[in-house]
Image (cartoon, rainbow, N blue to C red; front, side, top):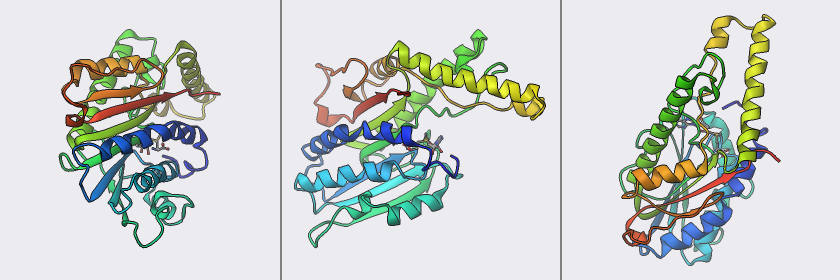
Length: 295
Ligand SMILES: C[S@@+](CC[C@H](N)C(=O)[O-])C[C@H]1O[C@@H](n2cnc3c(N)ncnc32)[C@H](O)[C@@H]1O
């Protein structure tokens, strides 16, 4: 991410805020689950970037723990992002961001809150198995593990060439499954995953997202035509994104990961709760939320 991410991520902040109520509900559910007597609570922040959005968002979790009578639990938050992340900015925000999760517990009775950061590929396992209570990810899993380099569009999914579109979809699905499988391994039984996503939950949102990337692609073509970049720079520029819709995500989870997750809440599509599933406490739960990209 650019060094100015915190300044220019208002839309992303809004997407994070969409998770507020889901985070509170998840904390309550975890506290009444199989780890109800634990003395610590571990949170993973997957794709944290410089933390400006998740640090304030996760304050909700710490406050909720306190309100639910778990104020003495030791909390750890581990931020995960790529090696090239601007980690210096994350550490500055952890130290100084008003209202951030490290600063909301006051008084002698509050358990300590620890922060960690790891440079790790989110498509790999990032934590020991069954060690995370709450995995949180603000608009991250649309970043693919590979860039496909379609010749006619900066997002392969929107290429006019059918085989690029198909390859993007196949890659997007494989990535999402891998990402979810890794989180399922990391979560404790009864742990929750909350992920907000850039995607589309209706035709209007789909069109709006598409228009943005079509425009960016055309601008890049124009930049080439005007001689500002070389053709190899043009050809090698690709946004490694796959923007799925919520229905597609839920179908994948229900079809491929039904033994690993129970979907207990989703927005923008139909929520599904497996009536024949084992008790919710035996499975990690996934809570998904989409947001509309444009006002
Ligand atoms: C759109 S930003 C979201 C940042 C933050 N969660 C927020 O809500 O503002 C996506 C983040 O995912 C990170 N990311 C992308 N691919 C990744 C990977 N394979 N492993 C770890 N982090 C990755 C990017 O570096 C970036 O910081």
